[in-house]
Image 1 (tube, rainbow, N blue to C red):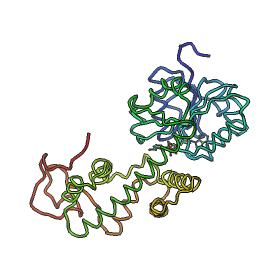
Image 2 (cartoon, rainbow, N blue to C red):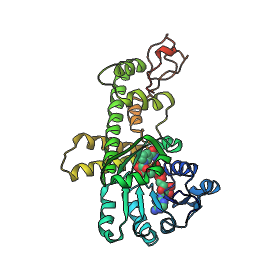
Image 3 (cartoon, rainbow, N blue to C red):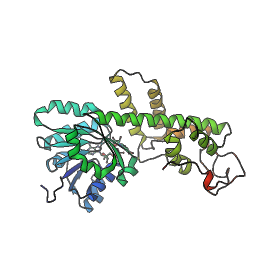
Image 4 (spheres, rainbow, N blue to C red):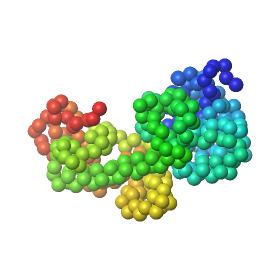
Length: 334
Ligand code: NAD
């Protein structure tokens, strides 16, 4: 099937994440066969040497390892089971890695149902946003047996930071870890939005407030790094649509329910996210819940940029006469 020693990789789902991941698989030298519901999503990859397949069945039939990077568990299931789906093409004993943010049930049910086919089904969802997918620096959380993990690790290393590719447990553990990371990050976002909105409304300088929080026990990676895309550029990360963020929050709460853990806070965070979805539409960025608070205040929260008189940049700044220098810039980790 392949002229090189590397396995042929089949990839389904060439969206914000999959487009970068596939470019890096190609770059690493793996033969690549792809498909997507939007054929135009493959144009650039095909120009770079990938092969287009009409449907997931053809991808699976012509590859050694199938990878999916799809929006929801329902779509993953449909892409597997459809008449032209993965299960119709994959050979007995074949390997399928689902890198979507999903729930354990989909692969678990297929594993049980098709037990006699000896399929190797691995969950390996990721963190790192579309920029990490493009740069090949994703963090990857793998649920698999150790031997299976070792076998597929080279292709994972083509997409992720080798230092941050973790075997986190057996089947399903990767999905669980990923959902919990997102749950906590979304909670950080909502909590930080509230705190900055209160502080700025109370007349505290936004940069001073943020620096004080970072220097305190309330510090977080979100305050130090992630919120800066909003405070500096007004960027709410459209690379990850809020509709997918709401999907993840729903899945995380489902997971909590399935293991009998009441999660009042997670449910509240989910509702704030759903309000932002209703307000700004499904393709708005994952950080638009922050904007809900800005809209309530009728002002944007922005830090003054280097060399700019404080107070001139945006309504989030209050003091008037200082000019920021390098030493006063917000602390950015890394
Ligand atoms: P996306 O919506 O940008 O891309 C999904 C792709 O799947 C699209 O190209 C779409 O055409 C394709 N697709 C949908 N249904 C299909 C079908 N039936 N058959 C074939 N192709 C189909 O989504 P994304 O942002 O790339 O996210 C993909 C997964 O990764 C999601 O589970 C998401 O939660 C997760 N994720 C996203 C990010 C991010 O920052 N975007 C980060 C980490 C994890």
